[in-house]
Image (tube, rainbow, N blue to C red):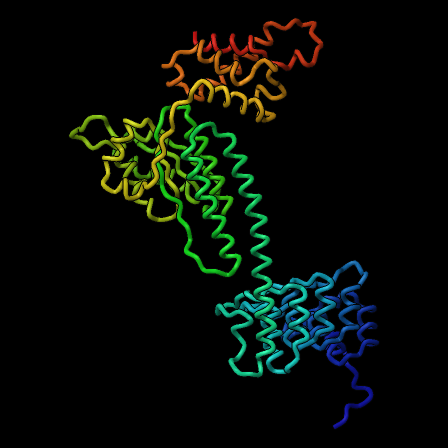
Length: 474
């Protein structure tokens, strides 16, 4: 039976389906609120219907709408499909191009995880028309995207000869995308390696440790490139470590740098380093240590737990009563195989042997041992220069500089003359900050209130450093 002349479409959705542009415009003009109106059954907007029937004129009208309300480009119907999904699954190339040109999200996923490219491939198999697939690929649709069943667009192709051209097209774009991602990863890798080298430049000495950090970093970055090329590689798990050496040799600083490195390459989800000592872990009474230690472990999850002066967890002499420090150590050891945390034990070399011997599983879990040597006078002078060149705005020394006479050799000679070997061994890098603070105070003491020379007001001299280190020795 023929439709009567009066049986015209009455809703904005039916106008879109019928292609009645005049009625569509009139309804929208009279009721602008219909712009994103949902129909009753499919919960589709006018843009969904227009795109699904390839009504390019209506799609353009909706996308260019100048009213106070804007069309919802990423609106989802009851199946979680956007207007671009509708265009893709119905082979509507003109509509797809318009949507993409207006910024439609090409990797949007429906409820079943399918992207527009998945649906376009389905339609191409049925219709033998690859135009929408080509359009989506022009906009770099991801050929490796997986739906909820782990299927890529290529996986949906049948093995028959009819899909060969489409298969070649998708394979070619897949390889191009892999190459592009590898190049992008290469650029990102260089930037990350530069960032790492910048961090390492602030570490004085520790040659072997720097080599190890570079090895780890390079391996991790190469894994990123492997994954970018579509290769499946096992996930890396950073080792638990022991940092052995005297105070002030840089153990805590290196742990923080390591935290940033592991986070930077995606090995750890945070760059947080939770620093703890015996008092943070061990309770005073029976039953207190376990919960106290577990709270700290929970706090450190996703990052690094840095156990400073770890040898204090183990008593120097055996006792009939169980020391609570052993309980804390056992709690830490119990989570070290979980992969949720990286543990670094730090302390003096000799006392740390007690920790190593206290638990038969220690060396199985802690596989990297790094020895932090005492700093020489020249290395301390280098640390002083680095600190002066990297002052934050919150620092007492921000805005100050060293006089030209304060060369590394001159400062090293000064440190050698004004400190004892015992003092340098006990303080190491911890000698530098108080020396600089004392030097600034000496600068203030010797300057006149009448001084208006901006250079003199902010320049620490060798004389100031000498006074600073002498005060330290006292």
